[in-house]
Amino acid sequence: MVGISELSKEVSKKTGTTQKVTRDVIKYFLEDIIREANRGEKINLAGFGIFERKKQKARVAKNPQTRKEIRVPEKKKFVFRPSSKIKYQ
Image 1: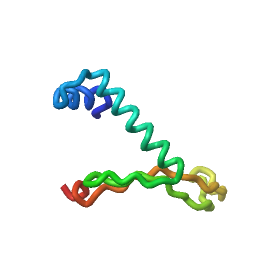
Image 2: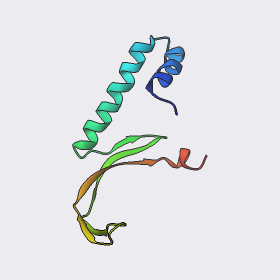
Image 3: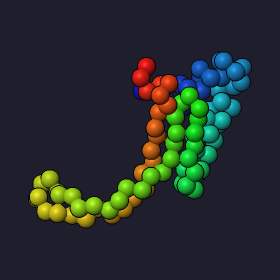
Image 4: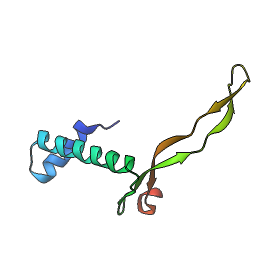
């Protein structure tokens, strides 16, 4: 698995900035995506994909252990839909 540290190493080499500055930029970028999605906005990164929050309706499910029906409340999911450019590579 690749994390922010590994990504920041590669990006800092390509951009000529320090790894700390690059790591901060990546963190702020991700925070902004989450904040905008939480406000109800769709974030479209051309050639990469779309980030957004979607409502999942309330539903009735079954507890697999007891087989009792339980009510699952409505919730907002964080969703990423990849661009067709990366989807089929």
